[in-house]
Amino acid sequence: MKKSVGSKAFDGFNYIFLGLLALSCLIPIIHIIAVSFSNKAATSANLVTLWPVGFHTLAYERVLSSWDFVRAFFVSMGRVLVGVSVNMFIICVTAYPLSKESNQLKGRTFLVWLLVFPMLFKGGLIPTYLVVRDVGLLNSFWALIWPGAVPIFSIILMMNFYRSLPKSLSEAAMIDGAGHFNILFKIFLPLSKPGIATLTLFEAVGHWNEWFMGMIYLNDQAKFPLQTYLRQMLLPSFAEGKITASDIEYVKMLSDKNFTAAQLVIAIIPILCIYPFVQKYFVKGLVIGSVKG
Image (cartoon, rainbow, N blue to C red; front, side, top):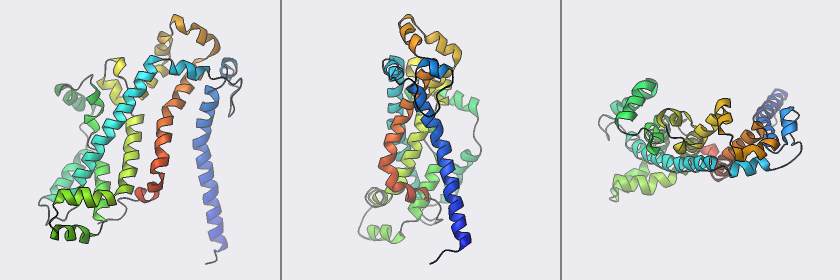
């Protein structure tokens, strides 16, 4: 079908708008990468734009030789692996019964509202902190996992995804003698790859970027996840206190901007590595929940 002039103009506007939006996201990242590879003089004089000035890799050598950074990096990796596994198990198992009709699950409407209510009305920071303290999670790795173990919004998205699957599939399986566990793990989950991949990426990014839990629930810096550690490093007083005698040679050649930029670049690499593997599911997975069952 031939497009009208207005339709072509609308498409052109969309391309330009989305291109500018993409550039506004890419330019800060390119600038940070350029700063991480630039020398101290150019960085201190704000001469670095989108290309390194006085190219070197000392900032990365310094970051990777920092045991505090490496330890925080592996804490975050462990948090993502464990946290996402817990989140996705709860999402998949909880969403399945809630996707059934009210005549198949008595009290379904009440259970859904029981989930939605705390999503709309949260308990607040202090009550949540007191609960975490009283169950003995303070200053432990699990304080980063359990307080956010039930992602209610993701459960509702997955519930709607299950409801979009043909009912005849589960009915035929039940006629053949399959139970609910078999239907969930052998039929629903294999057909839900786009939804699972998309929600896995969302949860992984959430765990990787989250820093507030580490700040309020952890006292020992050795247990900090990467983002909490970076947040501490960005505080000038903390950064000054971290400079030791062994850092003097690096301080002569690097500014704190080079060091911080290199840390930020390394911190985004894992998420950039995950994205290509779930990209093929992303378009279909993004519309989960848009079709009401």
